[in-house]
Length: 130
Image (cartoon, rainbow, N blue to C red):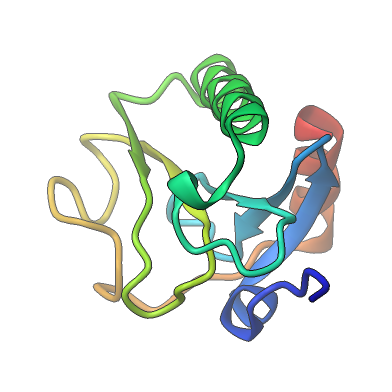
């Protein structure tokens, strides 16, 4: 079995970079700085599906992404969540939230239509997070 990114993530996200274990994706919605880590491990649905060494690598990469979000955006709150009801492939959301964002304090899922990034904005984020 080979790794293939879930179709929903391919549709809704932009690949920012590849780290040793995870693909770093950006949800294509400018309303929230919303990144997703996806371990490139075929068949993984839960973090416990990864061997211990990959679990450790995953948490290191999650901490790195969280720190980048803090340093870049200075959010009021950082939401990190592994949900998989709609997309069972293991992926973990990292969302910088602000008391001034359109959905605060509610969850960001499905409240408002996405507003896509421009090519220039994507290039800048690839530089900062790559």
